[in-house]
Length: 254
Image 1 (cartoon, rainbow, N blue to C red):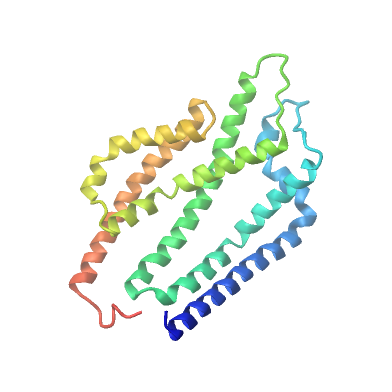
Image 2 (cartoon, rainbow, N blue to C red):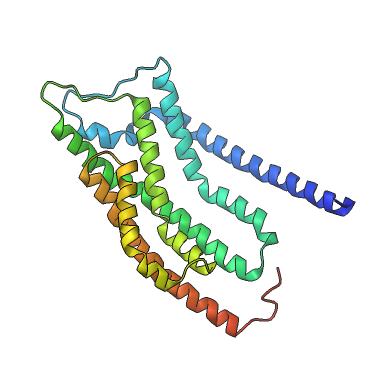
């Protein structure tokens, strides 16, 4: 590596370090501002389950420090989600100088749309899936059994469900990227519909509780989002063909 190349590599590492430091500081600042309300944030976080518990039901903590650590973890998660737009901006600012103009036109909308879809997936899980699942579990609990859960296990369950629904709601973005990169065509995506439907139910069976309601609530949105992805991919492909037939001056410049 030449001296100029080594200097450029070091400058990129320094810039990456600075942007990562800004991200960490922003998360910590928001966390410190929210720390006083950590218990209230956890109560809001646990509301879907608390609403489904019997009148005398409650959550428990089997770990000595769980009553402190779990609200802290939830508050840290909320802090990261609140600064996510700033995090994405830092990522975009780092990679943008190395992209071509046509890549910038594609990447920025994909980053924004994927973030919005991820939040929609989490919101769908919190407001639709959790109440349905917990009410179902409370209804089938055998008589004489005190249905309670440890707050650490509840946090792990909710985090897993958030990730499952957040990622599955990224289906349109994945479809658009695959079509735009030329990996698959629109016709191939249409032919793959039966496999996608089966795969959606398999994913629902793996990542959701063993009840039909939650599996349907995951599989059906995936199928609908897959169709939405095909529609958007058709539009993006048409726009790309127009750009190729009518190139703009300096379109390959960074």
